[in-house]
Amino acid sequence: MADTEPPADRQRIVSFTLDEQSVARRSPEVEHERAVAIFDLLESNHFALADGDQGPYHLHLSIQDNRLVLQINDTKDQPITRHLVPVTPYRRLIKDYFTVCESYFEAIKRSSPSKIEAIDFGRRALHDEGAEKLCDQLAGKIEIDKETARRLFTLICVLHIRG
Image (cartoon, rainbow, N blue to C red; front, side, top):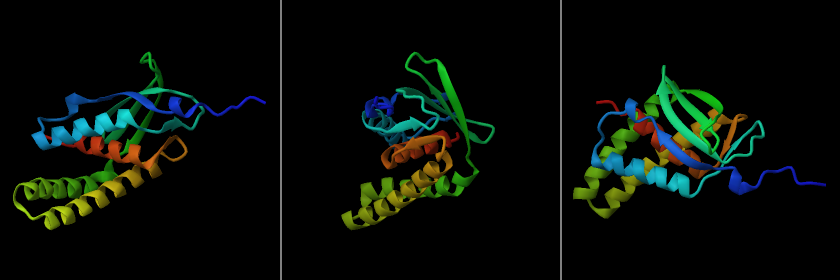
């Protein structure tokens, strides 16, 4: 009997783009967070469509009409599917996340290691909450692991930066 499960190395994002037109200029710290999230996402992720398409995938994230748009294409950049996720449930989380990140970046310059650690703990907790919310919203459509969800939440936050 043939194995019908796709190989795990195919259930992944191999190329990623972020809608740069919807974001304003970013601080060096935010730009660094964006670059690290994309690098880490492409280095290691789990991303599988529930409809059985085996991947691998090119993912493009954008915000349109108050919705997160996940445009999922094949490696030849041909469309496979598009998922829309309401962003309203993220508003408070994103605002809190940016506030904590600003405190964290300032603390790195001036504060004790224990204060930096405490702020970073809060930042990670918000990050985990956002990742969990994303997993819940994608349930039944897209299967992602925790680390993939965390990196995508970072990128969702970047999309919300306005000039």
